[in-house]
Amino acid sequence: MKVLADTYKELASRINHNVPQIKWIDLWRNQINFLENEYGFPFPAVFLSFRANQMNDLPGHNQNIDTSIDLYLAYETLADTYHGAVNQQSALEFFEILEKLNTCLHASGGDTFTGMRRHSFTPIDTTDGILLYRVTYNATLIDRSGNVKNSSQYELMHVKEYKVKKD
Image 1 (cartoon, rainbow, N blue to C red):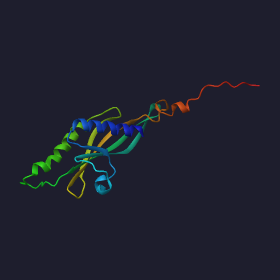
Image 2 (image 1 turned 135 degrees about the horizontal axis):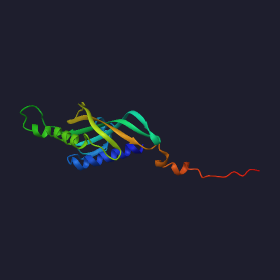
Image 3 (image 1 turned 30 degrees about the horizontal axis):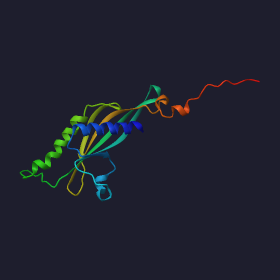
């Protein structure tokens, strides 16, 4: 779906521009749990996934898609977070990055989406010194792919007018 690709590119560009600490942005496919099978990527990394919750028809064969957008922030650290740790500030930089991500995404909109709102966040258990949080945003995507005039298939479907000669 073009609307998902366009939304992904728009969000990735926004994150890249506003949160310079992020070194890698990709679609989520559970990379963190299969690091030995993945291409190497630098940390901190952001991964995005999309889930359609509900679709509402609009005039012209367009649709609004109520979408959950999961943002996964992966941060590699062996620093300790316990109270009084010498390197605690370094370990807690993770939360500063989460805040910057929320600042650039929450209450935002773009060419393909409106009404981005943070819905929830939760830690995800990992190994190997990686902090991983999933932050879920809700937004409305505007899908115009059903509108034949906006579709790349329009030229194939357009029928010329023919006159039938009666005998």
